[in-house]
Structures are given as C-alpha cells and as structure tokens.
Length: 357
Image 1 (spheres, one colour):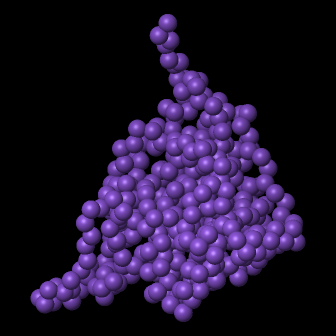
Image 2 (tube, rainbow, N blue to C red):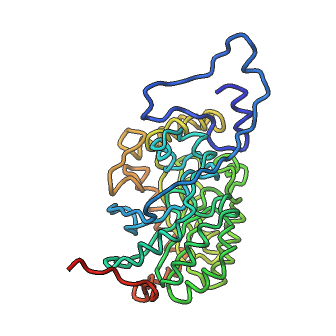
C-alpha cells in the first residue's frame, strides 16, 4: 500500500481498498513522475447514504446460529474490525470490503416503521430477533441516528424477544428500554471481546470500545438485571487464543451469565485484508498464525461448511474446545434465562387485512 493511502487510512482497520470479487477490472496506484502520490492525502471520512429497504427482517436457515431472523439497521460498520466476516457484503453494493466497508455506510431511516408493518402481518409467528448481527447496531453513527433505539421501542411495544451483540458501550444509553424488556423476559445482550490487550485491540478494531470499557458495560447491564453474556469473538489462533481463559474469567467477574467463542472466519476478501494487516502489525507471527488457521480449516484459509465454520476442526480446534469447556466448568457461569415468546402481541389499533373472499 502506498504511503499516502497509509496516512489517509490512519485510525481505520483495513490497510487498503481492494476491488471486490465482482469487479472485472483491478486498479492500483502508480507513480507517474508528476509527484501526484506525494501530495498530502485527505483523511478518509465517513459518509452516510439512505438504504431504501422494503423489508427489515432477514431470515436464515443456518444450523450454526441460535436464531432464524435478524435486523441490521446499518450496512457497513465504522468500528473497522479488520477481521469482520461481514466485510464481503459491501461487494454486493459495488464497493470495496476494505476501507469502503468502514467509511461508506448505509442506513435504514424507516427501519422501525418497516418492523412494525412486518410484525403486524397476519401470518407472522414470533421467535427471537437478533439485532445488529451483520454489522454492529451500536456503531458510532447510532449516537446520531438512533435507529437501534427506535427498533427497541417497537419490540418492547409488541413484547417481542430480541438479542443484541455489540462491541460498544453505547448500549448503556438504552438501559431504560433494556431493563423493561428484561422485566418481561424479552432481552439478552452479548458483548464481544477479542482481546484484553488494549494496544492490540486498538489496531484490530480501532473504533470499538476499549476492552476494559466493554467489561464495565457487562457489569453495568448485569447489575441492572439484564441477561448479559460475553462472546470471545473472533478467537484468533496464536494472536489471541492464549487469552481465552483470561477473557472468560474477566467476563465471569463482571457478572456475565454466559460466554461463548467463535473461531476466526476469513471468507472471500477478508482473507487478503487480514493477511495485509498481519504483515503490517504482526509480521513475525504472520506465517505462524496463518498456518494454525489452515490447520483448523482442512488445509485451507477458510471453509464455509455448516457445523465447522464457527469452531473449526483438527487437533488445534479440538484443543480450543477442550480449553473452553474446562474454563466454563471451573468458572461456573450461571447461564441465561430463556427468552419469552408467549407475550407477543400485535398492535391493537391496526385494522386487519380484508380477505379476498
């Protein structure tokens, strides 16, 4: 990557803006002798574009996740986590999974209205909704737009169960709504923690909350009676896996009711973005890290098969599973209460659709 792009990308996660996999042509910066590449670069700024979605609930049939529906009020994520499995989704927009993903954001201003419409459908059947799965629902722009808060208001009104996963302390802003949801058995919140080393976190996930701040959020939510867990996600072989037990212990001390982990996933363009990050920030460990990743992925850098994509396979992956199980047993997590799906109610003031017959 050129020096100017490095300077422009300061404070971001990705080190470049590679073409997406659907492009027919590739581009690269070339010095033409006119000193164009030596000009002071402009810092990459975040832009917001309206996403005119017709629906807001997405459904899936994956056996690897404990939900069949989710809501993402945003596309792209300013947290800039270099390892984010959602980066390749920006390719569908004709943009790069690199710096575009964390700076060219899309938002759904009518997300709450769309959700209300879908929940009022006569054939809708209640099941937990996962909020902010593809990209963080509490990323920095949420402070300005408040889409996630509006969605929570609708879910509370309809007594609909919801789960949240975030890296942001901004979730504390909605403590009033989360507490009321918890009173009805309708909420579970998970804080994702990759590492306890602040300097490493700053480079891996530059605009997310610091690790100790996330643990403070776990403690605050737990103290308020909100079922809270910690996800060690992603667990990165060699780079962060040695912290597994320490993160689980810190989560337990903060009051988390449960904890889990997800092995690093490198789909599509994320592979090269992550390897580029390693060459810049962990060059002496880079080959060792990638070797362990291949050990867990059948000799490849990524496998997408259900059943193994979240935990991997092979000797090293099995060792991680054993370490996790032993730590969970030793720490005696209390567990989370089941979400309540029986309290769901549709809006009383919405007129039912007329039958055709």
